[in-house]
Image (tube, rainbow, N blue to C red; front, top):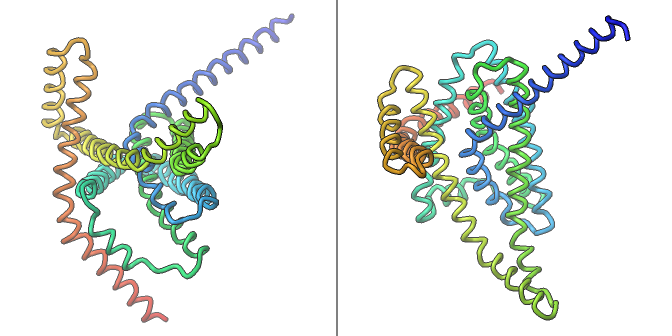
Length: 334
């Protein structure tokens, strides 16, 4: 074998190793970024099933598929290019946008806390102002559009958190990580939503089984447990999703403040976590994380509680005023 061919094969092997290392790096960073977005993912999973209520069992999975396609379109065709443009042209805007998303999560989470006890008055108002669909297709289109709109906000936060977790990666790596996280999270969220939505149907089918002997009794017991347990499971999922939103939002804002030199609260939580860890050596890492997560959650809840009156008294009136001005300007042009 010639020396030139040996050198070529050596170069090919080196390139293959570099490519494998790059793929491994992308996979690792995608996993880490996806973990940081877990709070929003849980909330997305908790929120979506309510958009499938009111449909016949035959339309539930097709509706979920429509929402999933809209979610992928949001992430891959709109949010990913916008994130890459920001990363290349205005990287200093990523952290403020991340903190703004964190503020949104705190606000949404704090607003949901009363709903865990009793329905929020906004639901009744929403039902009054939402246009009434005249047929089943219009009703379905209306629900899907509303779900995709909500998903866009949550997807924007997922993509921003992902981008914020890989600030030093190259442009190609950032794009690959964003695409992988966006795709896998969408598949995971709407796959789980599909299982949740169809679980009661599966439970009903098992509860009605006529199989004899012990196997039939077990299947019927499992079916009854599914049917009776799903409402409680959905309620628990809503609680977990709300807690995750507040914790993640608070953590994002604290991290952002630390970046801009306001690090005292983060240091207090870090010191408290280390102090608790010293008292509980067998579970030191978990205890430290739990203290910091609880502190971030309390900070997020306080921030969200302050944001609620600000949104009600300032942001919402300003937004309505701008919309009215825009509609009046369009009417004048027509």
